[in-house]
Image 1 (cartoon, protein in one colour):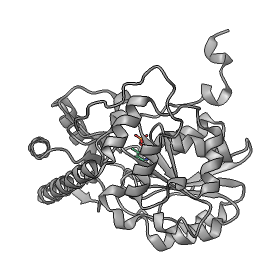
Image 2 (cartoon, protein in one colour; image 1 turned 120 degrees about the vertical axis):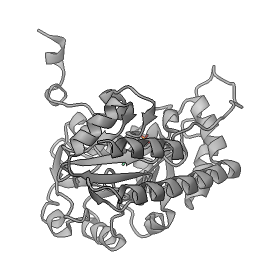
Image 3 (cartoon, protein in one colour; image 1 turned 90 degrees about the horizontal axis):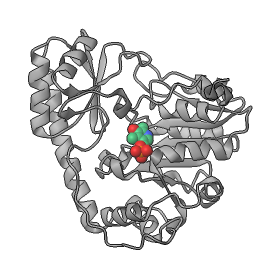
Length: 350
Ligand SMILES: *Cc1c(COP(=O)(O)O)cnc(C)c1O
């Protein structure tokens, strides 16, 4: 018998997350993972490596609470925002419960639920990439966790606040609503943190991977009320955060670190505007979708040809052709001005 046949049936059937790294590619312009294009520089200040770390390092928790405008007891730190997705499923879903999410959206909701053996219900976003509340309400039977993403990856738009509040009302006492705010630093006024006091079943996912330019650090957060946080505390690994990660995260969350985040955001927004203006002049661009994040979704007349042509030149974008309703669409991460110019020049040759 092959070892793989000894694995759980849902694991045998599992298609792992098609991460940017797994998809490969060769090049020097990487615009496929919504990373910041250059690395910040940090020195380690804590060199105690022989001891286990603090399970929830206080300086990290307090630093993020200050940044997010919540109390430390509303914050859980984990190995990236991705770990938070899995913790919530593991903590709240029985084998016969469902999760619900709304494609086209972030792929990890599907992968994490499949890995945990939890079935998913999907309710597609509307044509303008908003929540279909009527369909969601019809499908809530048996649903324990609803994942929504705002700004949504890969479309870039915010979900309407009034819809999110209606979703929170219709799920009260029945299910956890996870609002994935991985890109909220680019539009902080749209955050739902101010609603935490009203909704004990709201969980907000955050990360240092995007605006903080620290995808390599693997550090993310869940913001929620104390009772929900303490449920997640029960299932998280004993020492989720390595000492060097906590050290660098603490520095990134200092007032100096936050200032750098602000100037990065300004730069990304400027480059995003430039790219949108240049793309809108091209005849093979069908639509540039509104974005509040550090990437834009673009529909071309022949998206796959654009994707392949740039791939061959070492400019790696993210093909969305197979995502629900996104034929001929490509997601482009906002990089440096130089990278944006190279990308535009390459697109013009297609
Ligand atoms: C990047 C991302 C995350 C979390 O990423 P981590 O690197 O695991 O913190 C979560 N949700 C969405 C939509 C993302 O794009």
